[in-house]
Image (cartoon, rainbow, N blue to C red; front, top):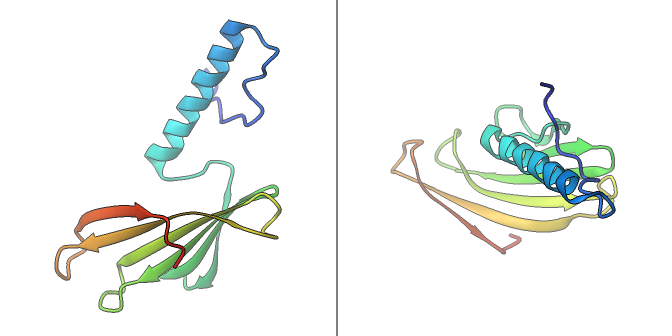
Length: 123
């Protein structure tokens, strides 16, 4: 059985009930796979600013869609990010809508994450 990727044009309102349910199920499974893998299949990854080891701006792109992540790195540890801000663009990066900010807390100087929280602060 071939893998069914997310289809943004599904379900179609004019389809019959069973087809709509199958399309929704396939899309939900694809979304699950994105979440579990931590990847956006079909989106190309690039580091815009920073370094490959410590990117401060990451861009995922597919056609005209973009997901941008702005990262703040811990000044005391080169391996920990403390904040990630997420943005979405549907016009090839011409303009971006803010999605959410993730704030990450760690145990001492270790890389063990103790909490992650989400808020609507675009800073």
